[in-house]
Length: 175
Image (cartoon, rainbow, N blue to C red):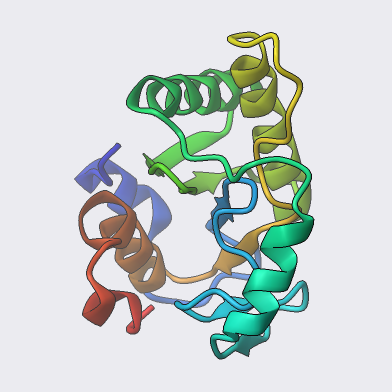
């Protein structure tokens, strides 16, 4: 979903707003980015850690199931589930991207906390995925990133990132 000029006008200028304009939510599929990963990793407090092959191998050996890599069909299902859920809740999706191992959503959900919105969206998507299989499994890692967006400029950058540039490392470092 693209950020439109009408949305730009609705959210105003670059002033810092008292309430967040939107939430930038990101989460990974189960075990697709574990502690020790060669890309680095974040702990539950959001602190970044360097790669650690020994830690990664130790955790991989203890995983009860294989990591989840979403198929193209599952990715479409997740996007539709999130879209339907946000429509039901009257939340406005400003950008949405479901990749094989993670999801990004920029959503305006006034009066809600980012933690509640993230939990609700993940649960809805999990139910939809679980209906497609008889296998019982975890689809997502615990938690996720819950950034609050307070300025129009920041909102425009994260929407552009999700819609166009999320795979470009150079852009990712400017958020």
